Image (cartoon, rainbow, N blue to C red; front, side, top):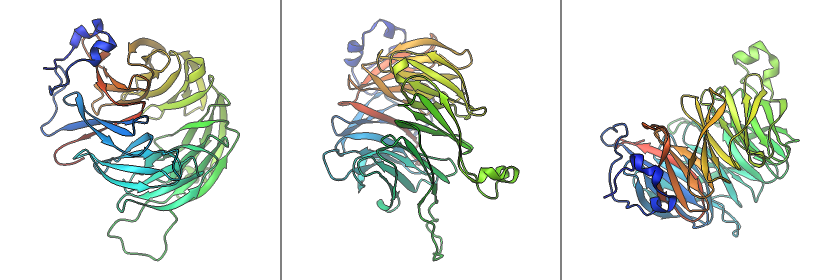
Length: 415
């Protein structure tokens, strides 16, 4: 039977870890979990046209789901037990979204979208999703109740990332091909029992466009929806944007300029900034600079770069702990996770993974950090807390070229 590795793990190679038995055995030495609690990780294997489902309670592979060609992105619905898989399907005239029912871990539906979808975001109601289609330069609006596309809006060239504000009012799309950012007004869907009014706002309405952001890649919107930051990977900068506020908001009453979106600054960072990780409190963002092996720390309040620090070879993706104290960065060129202390302003340790780690995800209690290893086709499971500090705990099999990972926790009562 599979046994927890505890302190023995430091002496085991990655290859040895991959051969460990995967029989059911609850995590030993972790916080107790309530009765009926279940948690799974979903891994999109872009080279195998599958999604691997990993059981995070028993630390084993649960099953493998067949989806569309080239699954490249995932999104979790916080209001219902569903995960959405973006099937890019480069060789086909259209792409699709696979809907995973997480209570049964099966494919519940497939929603056609436009050509080469690459990213998806779910709004705050949990009833709409937005999919950017890189091959058709537009964005699909999905009705998740009816599981169908209900509208399409134009974007710039080769849109790559979509982000929606916490209040559901603002949606941002980065356009890598045209080096621009598109900002939209997003209308929340009416409640299911609402009476028709005869007037309905369009699901998306273009509000503003900002250019001069070569290779626009990732974006982040602050929790209070006041500002957005966009990584300009070809220009080695980050664009700061003040987002338009509602006409009756306090911000507009104080300053009428808050009625419109406007550029704040272009901030110099490292070479090829590709990913933005944000503190949960929104006070700072951290930009992974792939070609300069560094992260840049930016104050979102002052819109200034506090510093750029070495993190490891080819940083790809970062996540910040819920207590705002620690940044974890996947260093794809070093086969490792860099652990950066935000309070101390320095790299404190490096943890080994499989080959070329990229996408990261925490478990619900943050006692586990998962890294999808693109080249070795597995998932490194990092124990974030232990007697000897953070350490590699085990490796779980995934599939060919895993490109994205998300987690979903549920109880028997749902969600």
